[in-house]
Each structure stands twice: as structure tokens, then as C-alpha cells.
Amino acid sequence: MPPEMSAPQSSQIPRAKILVIDDEPDIRESLELVLGDAGYSVDCAANGTEGIQKLAVHGYDLVLLDLMMPDRSGMDVLSEVRERDRETPIFMITAYGSVEAAVQALKLGANDYFSKPWDNEKLIIEIDRMIARRRLEYENTYLKRALKQRYSFPNIIGKSERMIRTLDLVGQVAEARSTILITGETGTGKELIAKAIHANSPRADHMFVAVNSGSLPPELLESTLFGHVKGAFTSAIQSKKGYFEVADRGTIFFDEIGTIGAETQVKLLRVIQEKEFTPLGATDPIKVDVRILAATNADLHQLVKEGKFREDLYYRLNVINIALPPLRERREDIPLLVDYFFSYYCRENNKFVDQAGRSQLHFQPEALQVLMEHSWPGNVRELENVIERAVVLATEPAVPIDVLPDSLLEANGVRLRRAEGGVPAADASLFEIVNDFERRIIVERLEHCNWSQTEAAESLHVPLSTLNQKIKRLDIKIKRKGGE
Image (cartoon, rainbow, N blue to C red; front, side, top):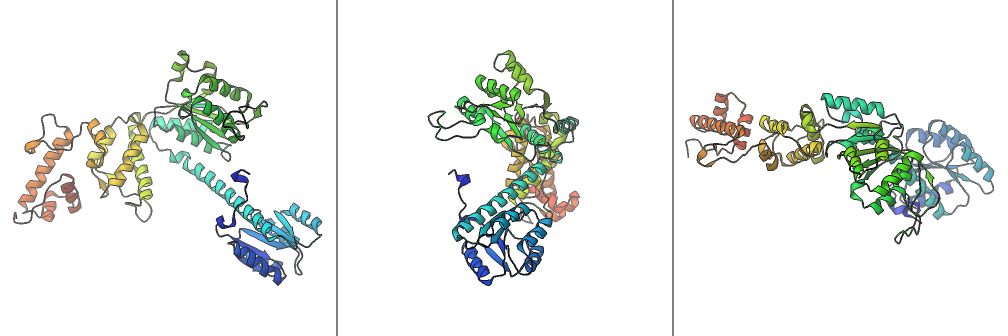
């Protein structure tokens, strides 16, 4: 059997809680021992009324319910529980020969039934399987909600006019079935937009499958997309579903669509037109309902002219185009992105976070100015890397300029090293000149105050903490009072 179909092992099941409702003490004691040995926490009720009371107060992962009880029948208990709880699995325990009653219980919402005397091993296997399945369903629901929240429009950062127009367009197209081509430079967030479209569409409860088209060779890409049957090629020792089948009723996203080969382009066009495909080695096509989103940082129209991309496929994909602006064309979004990434990575690294979970980090003005003036060839992804690095290296809430990568500083004409003789070089940048002037002023004032940092801060009309930060950033060596 494939791994996903094998029976879960009791030792692998996290401790779950089961309620046993049965009027026979021997049955309750027996089940408590068997379930306890299997790693479960067990609670017992001696009759239906007590069972309903416990269910109203406590949460259980599964209920074992006797069908025949003196005060209230298991069928009555089942009906009452199902009126307010459709989720908790319920297994009925029936006397030998009462199969008809058990079938009726299944119609009323029971998940399974076992006749007395039952096989303990089989009972545990079925309980394990049901609890594992319910937890998987819960996790899937939770992940889908998290995905929708994470990729909701408020979490796509930007207040610039171009980003507002882009998000307006995303909101308009999310509900549609049309294919969408997302264009933009590397690092602009094309996959983020694709996930936002999916998360805000009627397909949000189904799969979002991302395909990195450029990372797979043509023969592997086709098998990955369309699947194959056993024996389709030498290493095909068993049949395998392709991404299109997995994404049925959901969304499939092609990143760097311009890199796929000519043969795959033909098959992709067929899927779009006919809504069907044929796995490798198979003879019968499979019908699918999949929305296609594609992204590229290349000029697909130019690739069409060069004969490297099919024109008919280009027009099928480019029904709606969402063009993402590079970060250098929406610089007003940089401070917002900085704050967002500071919050994220401060929480992830548990650094500089207040009691409310907010980041306390911020860049000093000269450092933020460098970020605002940088051309960002890597776009938002490059900025994110810079912020993550700053969080890791930061030693104080006000992040100084020397925490920024040397490559970024050099690209913006910033050299933090001082020239020989304590005088900036003739080709010094504005930052170097300002830093040199600030350093000389602070040193002069410290000398005047006999190296008392408190007195120097008062005379410069700045907080002592600000002066200390500047002393550290400018690498000023503090002398003892009296010039020792």
C-alpha cells in the first residue's frame, strides 16, 4: 500500500481524548484499558444523560457510544449530539445481531459501528485512522484559512499609486475564471500576487499548485504536470498523478512560463482549450477544471517574435495582464516594507519585540536614506534579505548604517572607512563628509567636558542614549576623565 493509505500506528498518534458512553462497568473498564494502552486519554460516562453532560462541557476527539442503554438509547444520544456537533467522530457499540439498528445510526450521523464482542486490534486501527483523518482535515482547514489571511490584500504592502491600481485589478480578477499573466522583474512578488488571487477566489478551498517551470528538464516537467501510468518509462514503477490532476477545481501557477519547451507548450495549450490532458503512457484523457495563472520576467511577446514561444499559447495566457512595478518605481512603499519585514523577522528571531509583539527596530536616518536611494535590482526580495540581515546583526533599536551590506553601500557611493590623516578623501561621499564633521564636533565637545558623556549630551542638547549611539557608530574612543 502507498504510505498515505497505510494504517496509522498507535505510537505515532498524539495523545487524544476519547469518551466512552456505556452502562456496563465491565465494558467501560475494558475499553479504558485498551485505549489507555494505545496512548489515548479516556473519559467514561455510565449512561446517556451523563454522556451528553460531559460532551457539553469537554471536547473529545472521538466518542464510543453504546446503542442500548436503560435511561436513553444511544440513538437518542446520537441525534441530540448531532444537532449541535456535526464534527466529533462517533462510533456506535452494538449487540450482536443488531446490524439494522447500526445502519440506522449511520444514517443519523454515526461514523462507524462495532458489534460486541469486537476485535481490539481492529477497533484501535479504526480509531487511529479516524482521529488521524479528522486532524488532517482540521489542519487543512486551518492552513487554508492561514493562506487566505496571509495572502489577503492588506498583507500585500504598498500605498503607491501603482500598487493601489495593481491591487484594485487583483480584486477585480480574483472571482473570474480567466487565465492571468503576471509580469515583472525578478523579486517583485509575482507568486505573492498569484496566491492572493487564489486565496480570494471561489477556488480558495482547493489546491494552489506552484510550478517552477525553469527548474525542471522538459521530460520531467511533462511527467510532473500530466502524471504517468506504470511502465510509461523505465523508472515508472507505479502510476503517479500530475499537478493538473492534483489541482483539479483549484489553481495551478506557472512561474517563469517562458522557459517551458515547445512540446510542453503544445500540451499546455490543449489543457487550456479542451480542459483535459492525457498522462504519459495513457490512452484515455482526464477532464479537469483548473484555473491557470502564469508569471514571467521575460518579454513573452519578444519570445513569440523570435519563434521561442507559441503565439496561440501567448494569447491564451495573456487574457488579463497584471504588470508589477519594480521597487525603484514605487520608492514611497520602502518604509512600509521595512516596517513589515522588521516586524516579521524580529518575531521570528525573538529580538527587539515589545510585549504586544511589535518590532522596536528602526533605521537611523542616514541608513534609511541609503535604502530610499538604492536602485534595488533584486526588488522586494533583495530588500527583504537586507532587513533580515539587519535584524540578525542589530545590537540596538536604532539600526546604524554600518549594518547594511557593503555591496549595497558601495553601490550607493558610501564608504564607511575614513581616509588617512582623519580628513575625508577628495572624492568622499556626502555620508562620509557628514560623518567626519559629526565625529569632530562630538570629540571636541567631549574634550571640552573633560570626557563626561552626560555633560556633553546636555551641551549638545541631545539625549545621552543618542550620543552613546553616535559614539559607537562613529567609533569614537572614550578617554577617562582628566585625559588619562
